[in-house]
Length: 261
Length: 320
Image (cartoon, rainbow over all chains, first blue to last red; front, side):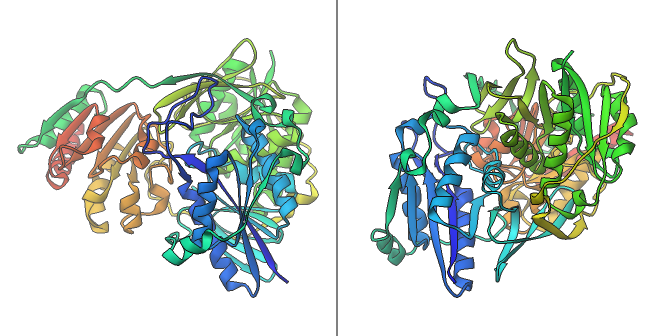
């Protein structure tokens, strides 16, 4: 039986760009280039490795986002994913984490799945709650924040490194997994992979395909509201000294003046 | 006054500092009712009462240790139904956020994660968040359901505020899904004797410039002279010089201590994302052009192998 793996990915504004907010206090996507969230590359990598180890498996990459988000799907396809699903709808603008989990869960159910793999968090919002929300919605086990993951028969196993302890986890499929940047370096797309990606199918779904009403998502459906977004004032220029033999002592003097010693 | 549920992060009854900070913030929006689960839950009561908990709801069962996250969600939901609070506050640990998120979904509420401050507003609690690598701060509210908010460590000072802290047993019946993810083994992290990275008042970090695992002893010695936690940049972690649990940055931990000392760290955006909200920032780096110097209150352009040991000695002699 084929193992159906769905990888959820996010198209995020480049962190090295000048990120800011639009007038409606959503993230301004026009002024900064977007890309596949780096943490999701690890999810794609683990999906591909699990698929390679399985007798028969199919990796579908799924994103919810604007037109440009296709770039994130193309990147995942060029790494080796088999097909892609793009959920795109104007009414999705301003959707929060709760709404995003609704759209993802409906799309995952429509696609059909045995295993969902996500990155531990997006590199823009950094909340890290969407995998748990999707698991709650799907009613399947969450096996999250794994630094090691494997699938044997219909069981997923992994290691979760927490602050207090390292835990070995186990759950029956279907399940939702999220992986950390410790799970294994993500492969670079090969030239062959990039060429092949152009021919791979990308399905586009909108809200009506998922039986979701416009008012359940977007700014209108959001459970949270941003009232203010203010750019942090630039730090006032600090004191910089060159070490000419006394740098450590000078620094100690500064720390003492600030009452840290 | 309205009651506010506070989820307690503790290890075998020892309450972790972020929970005590949370009690301070909780008092701004209502009367804190603490929820302590698992082994040692009842032992948390005295500490929680001392910091403002009017009531402590406790429950222990093997499910909390044997299965991941969901049993705790079931229990927090039981507490929510018993209390009907005005808000639910949870420490922003990885697990705390997952518990809070699932609860929010179940009770039809919005969730705000990683708040760095919290105040009472006309329409419920207002949360401050620090976003885009701390280049912006936002103020947000939950506008549907009961606000569920997770708060980062070091967002408030711990204040004693003695309250009744009456212990009550919480009645919990676990859902069918509670046992979905088994914890088959658990290896406690070996204590370094140093403060936990995200909770520490001072963090001393090393990066590529430390140039080898063996040289991290210089960074550790400085940290120990200040009673600080040790952090590492991604470059140092990827090189295998220091454990990933100590990584500060976008893909590691975000820290917000009173003092952050970056040694041999250039200050790439990924690192800045994890430390830019530190109150006072100090850097030592050979490269005068390193972007970290744009952030510092005090910077030393110099070889960390000269500067850091000298600093450590000076601190030790000043402390006597």
